[in-house]
Length: 196
Figure (cartoon, rainbow, N blue to C red):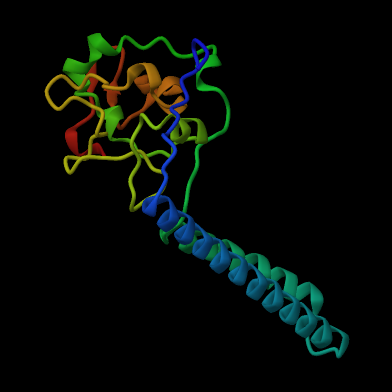
């Protein structure tokens, strides 16, 4: 591995575990392809039905498009509330520039590290490194403890346990204008604990 290469390489697994893993992945891939084919077929049938109704004069195409847009907007918020996979922005977090200069060590005794209670998705770079943990129930959201803090935030000091590998979201976050963190940053007045 070259110097500076932070990617974690997993050992090659052989034997019964590898066979089980291969079989499990094959099953997932087969099911995924079946769903893709079923969705393609349903989309083609629905498209043909709509086309037939429009050509037969049973549906006004302009009204149909307006209704489709309204339903898409309504469904978008409902879909967001359902289980889904989220992934953060894709760029190299180690080459980011122009990051905010926030004196975290000085502020933590006041703000209690509330930024470590924010929810956000990890990037593929974070996932490939295998350092920052994510929530298995909410892939790929940063993992939290029952108290709402990131699992990497020290419960006593609030120091970050993965500071060198912290996600891009943490690197570019500027708490100074976030009213969930500070009522008045200049005068160092933190927001109330129930601001989340």
